[in-house]
Image 1 (tube, rainbow, N blue to C red):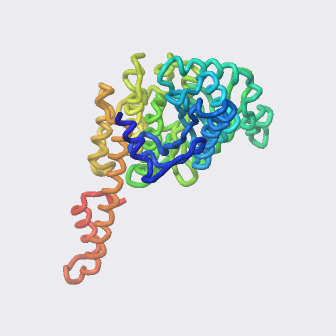
Image 2: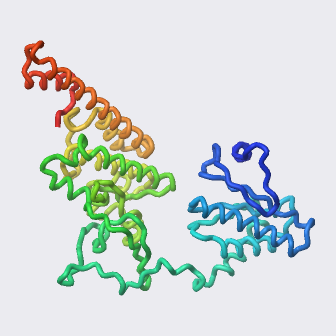
Length: 402
């Protein structure tokens, strides 16, 4: 009833939708971006041909609105199959044919049924209608022989090597296509030219990628990625700095999502050597893993950013606060390392803490800058030189000056 109330609340006042047409509104309190409203035909009020035309129009107009608003997925009920009396098998044929012809750029179409009697005809017909793979969209398939990522001397470009395989194509983000060769499936994605975070930190002699400089922004980007993955109930299970890739502008993206499962199978995830320093205790012990396993790994990633060091032998020293990171971030890392997975922070909580810490730090920098200008303007009257002023400001702000 609550969901029905929320759906009703998303409708506009004095708003109507004729049979066969569709309207789109915001989703109010529903867990969706939009609600698309349509009215199917009352089956016995029309000739069968007219009823089929109106029902097809309902699905077609919904799909058109979803594509126009750049939706990635849509969920349908069995339109007109309830009180409107449309025969289930006939409705299934009309609905699936409309989806097949007018899906457009949608990646996912779901049907939600409230009874087996309604769903069975749809499922049976779908198995038959979509069995022929020759009707599938092949525009994204790239022939293996068309992939040429090599040095001028013909040597493949080896960008990284880990516990689950070697990376020759590059660091990836935007999806470009797929390459299928036998049972092997490869996603071809946009090259990320900034390299991986592990390498950046390893060669960071000036501290450019530590917390108070670029590290905060990178940590926030990774947190956003985890929020998205976990909202889809996806656990990465191999989160580590070698799998955090950077663009030229140091925008961070999480890579190798699900790579461990793809290459080695679920049973190998916790024991691959490449992930030992980041793996959660439950992974190492072969126990059940959840999205909270990623939060343990994220704690190690944050520790690396703050210290600029690598987690050798899983021996992580205490952070120096506030020289290396604010107290809130140090506390956040400790919470990520709690042995009980359910006691670790969620991705949303971690993101919010990092975001608030970032805002707080920027505000303190502004205060320090203002104090510096005030002191330098009044050095003569105060009898202070610039070095004395600088030391005084540092003590007042208790914040690192680099």
